[in-house]
Length: 114
Image (cartoon, rainbow, N blue to C red):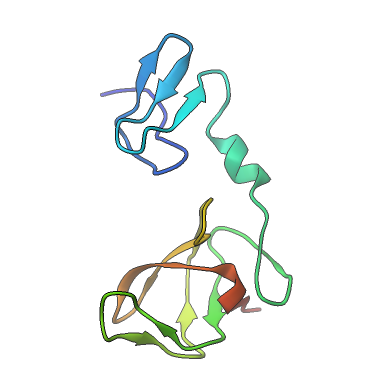
């Protein structure tokens, strides 16, 4: 099994080495070998709609009805989402919502619980 790190962009497990960089074949992201993939996660500062900082594993609540793109489903106001994962990008929260499945949410439409 490979000891190369997963891609920090798409979390692909198939990066390869090219001289002094790693290259992801799935998203074409390139990063230096000596830079750890955890640096981007440590610098990632995501805040909810109220300005409260969010962290991996937090529980959040949806503050607005959100239509699920490509289907007739709607994530209702007050839906509680447990064990979120922060990611870099347009939609900065990865999560699983009961009855809907895997979702990406924008932090501006959620608030931290507790």
